[in-house]
Amino acid sequence: MPVDPTIVGRTYPPAPPHEVTVDAVRAFVEATGASYDGGPAPATYPIVPAFSAMLTFLEAEALDLSRIDHGAQEFRHERPVVPGDVLTVALSVATLRTIGGNDIIGTTSAVTDADGALVCTGTATLVHRGPEDPEDGA
Amino acid sequence: MEPRTFRVTREALVAYAAASGDHNPIHQDEDVAVAVGLPGVIAHGMYTLALAARYVDESLGETGRIATIGAKFTKPVVVPVEGVDVVVAGTQKDDGTIAVTVTCEGVSVLGRCQATLRG
Image (cartoon, one colour):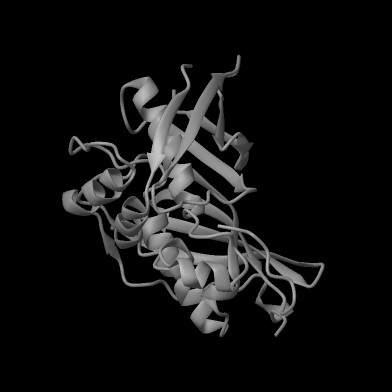
């Protein structure tokens, strides 16, 4: 099923706020083999609430996670994430292209704190695979 | 910046799935990965990018200085039962940007991976 082209510009209702705890950051850091000192979270930590927001988006558009490859990701930080932050993500669809039967979806996720201030912006490229073209991906 | 080697294991991917919320089974289950045409279990792209961020943080000696980080996920990191090594290296350019390369089995797995630092 091709992706509905009218989703470009659409913003999805935010997932429930994500509370950044020391334990949550430690689990994230230790999974990469590093140790955590209780300070700022790593720069890619916002993928935690951003991934949740992506699942909300996929569900809203009846898109199957098993057909999605993560093509690219960037985070642009206004400040580091720290324990105690309560983060909310607003995901919107910025771009949509179709190449070789695959839909290339560009999303922008605004990550804000409890005061509504922007903490970081995530941009992702999601490849929604067409029916006959399974590709390597991450 | 000195290159470093990090070991990626399936146990770490399970831990990362729990920590990140990305429970896509292609990162944990060989049968599912093969069924969708992959050579085997592959690391989350964001796991590999997290290793790039770890490399920058540990090279700087602190976490929290990265202002931007991003990459294209160009090749999968296939993780066999015994695990696999990835090699991370960085070069700081004149403008302060750090260009990061991540290779697995001699193949570059991230495209245009770079980090910028806050002042």
